[in-house]
Length: 264
Image 1 (cartoon, rainbow, N blue to C red):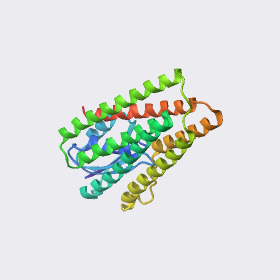
Image 2: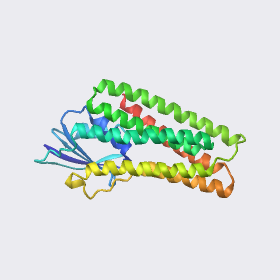
Image 3: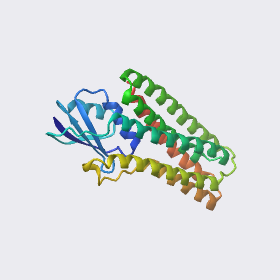
Image 4: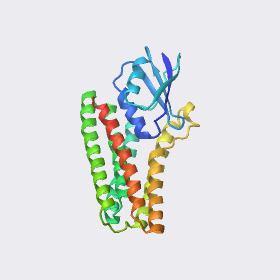
């Protein structure tokens, strides 16, 4: 048995953890995976050479590098499948709820920032759904579902860009900054709950008890929409909301491309 540690520079949220799990799910010889998102490290317990694992990780373009690899007597056993399914269902339900809430609120408020944030929540929901399929499903079913989810997410991101362009060059009333700020604060609380659930499950493992998991992308998006709401209020301008919406749609589009890589 070998214990190999990789640094993954672009792994900064649970969604990317789920993508990595799915990418390595059907690789022979892997016994256990241990993610330290705060320090952007992945520890793999496996049999045989580490090169096939590194090749799979490189295909995701997350800027992966090898830190160390050595023989060990431990197998790094983590959550059993039933516990993993329960955890994934919990975070999936939270993200799905806030996707619906933010999408409806974004339409009512006329805010592209809220609509974009709702798609970011949908992106996480799709990733967790794919991870659930990976727990008990076949590799073929997982890849077909990943392709459909990736295409849907990419179409939504492109639609978002089109809407931003229309609103940028056209006349639009100011978005409701009160609704933007209030709903984004609720979404921030939802992300905090997801982080709590994920960290609670990992805290049972001794080597992860001191680890702090921080979902940088989702938290920054929530704070960005809140900032856009404040700037809209102070400046009486639609542009802060459109700028934040554009940045979030870029994140959603990048996530769609990452999901599509899993279907190859």
